[in-house]
Image (cartoon, rainbow, N blue to C red; front, side, top):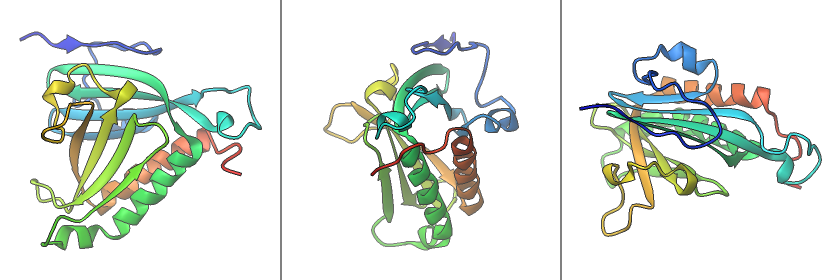
Length: 199
């Protein structure tokens, strides 16, 4: 079966690029990589949406987020102003807090433990849930919707009895991986720091 490649957005895409097969350090230098088997998501901040606005609440802090997805043979990417600088900082802090309690998540046996981090735009969301089929202590769930809903969304998990306007990808992670993800986000923020924040 031939591979399917989808291109939407402002950045060029190299169809021969396989996110799962790529050396992770190549991607980690310029973004946040989640991968498991033949499923991968790479998020990279490519700049401010309005680089010329340095003192406008909200507008000065919107970031252009480039998303690359791999789901088996399917590849897709898109760039969209999906997060603000301070939302990205919140995500890093949230990941560190989940990492701090990874052992609690891993040992939780009753109703599934979860915590969520959602943002102004519905494109992205993240959730940490206790346990993972691989034995990792935490499932990191990446929610995709609106402009980040891929064209193969019908293949992805969604809530039963609802339309597939929000789908997700699950990744098994441990404390060290959660801390590494937070570090990757903080490196993005060093390149594109909070300029105004919420007043």
